[in-house]
Amino acid sequence: MSRKIVLVIGATGAQGLAVIKSLVAASEDGTPSPYVVRALTRDPDSRRARDLQAQGVELVKGDTKDLSSVAAALMGVYGVWVNTDGFTIGEEREIYTGMRIFELAKQAGTLRHYIWSSLEYVFKKGRYKEKYRIAHSDAKGRVADWMRAQPSVASDSEMSWSIVTTSPYMESVKHGMFAPFNRREDGTYVFASPIGDGHVPMTALADIGYFARYTFGHRIETSGRELEVTSEVVSWDNLVATFIKVTGQKAIYKRQTLDEWFTNFENVDVPVALEGREGSTTFRENFTGWWNSYRDDLRKRDMDWIRRVNPNGYTLERWMEENLIGDSVGAAPYLKAAEDGYGIRPNRQRRAEL
Image (tube, rainbow, N blue to C red; front, side):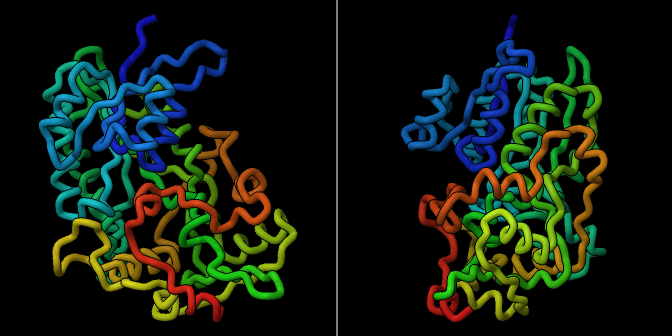
């Protein structure tokens, strides 16, 4: 059987690793995967890249800032999963890069299935109200909007496209913005958030991997379509109640205003993108829109469709049962930027007061 080469852009990030794991896994009947993976990476000598290579993944050195390297990586592949890193390159560059990679894929000749890993165009969903502007999300959503104007033909000689729109990773419950910010002397975990009574569609990384494999395997059905995926839509009352049920630990939900929540971090007024220019969107501005959109429940998901397509997908409870072991809450970061030491820092003195 001739196996199809799939290029993964964003391969060594948290999402990319999950997508690759799913693509190379054996099929349900035990036969080998129909896919082999080529990974685009800035640093083939990094730990994550070497781990991929040990699994049989082909490494190609390149960077989305060097589009000639992307064009070279696209040559000879059947499909591509594209997840650009807006938290590194910034809003404006991500829009341009997302459009250009699509055009390069069309030029490659052999490429048949192009999948854009997207986020919601929340500014548009919120009727362009400034309080819903989210740089890292809106950039991907604008690219997705542009793609809808492009042809998608699922044939042996043309390229089709699909959009898989994800949501915040469930892994953030263990280490990230959804994790408890403090553990009091009496052992109580404190989950602080400005979400009010709103909800967040949380997606386990493994479920993103599932939907990547599903989309490549259902080219005709997903041609020209956007798949809005998630694992479970979660309120903070439910988050804390599930944490208590699974861990047996004491926990509370501390409701905060946005201003109060930002005091849990340091350097919130720097650009949200690592390479953001002076005057670009700050962390505070970006995540003000982000939390506003969840507090006001702008983000919807069709859970009936999701459960039909992915009947074994994660629930929050099952994910916690498998991942919250002992004192693992707040353990080593899973996001590559955090692992590399980038981004904002926790205000430990403030958190100790929660």
